[in-house]
Image (cartoon, rainbow, N blue to C red; front, side, top):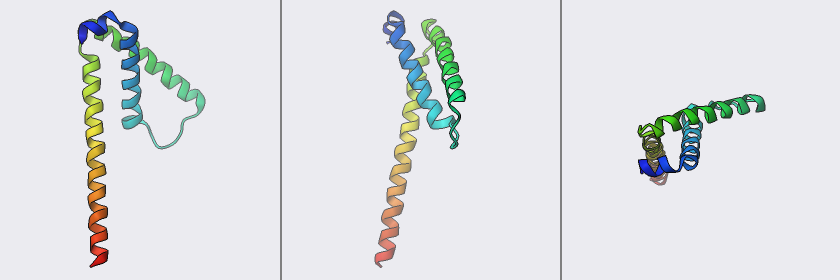
Length: 98
């Protein structure tokens, strides 16, 4: 996979940017909305950072693989919260019926 991404740098850049954006939006974004100018600056800076991470990826560091692990762990936590909330709703509805 590392050599394939090295041979296709545009695809690697897009994958890095999408994964980086997902991680930012799920972990670091605050509840309040930013102004459009700040949003533009933020995404331009993430695009520049993705370029830097692409250089590291090209130098044989597993940047994409690490971002995939981070995203999969975030999805695992999201599934866990969903299951816990469903169990709490089921327990609450069972208490009301008794």
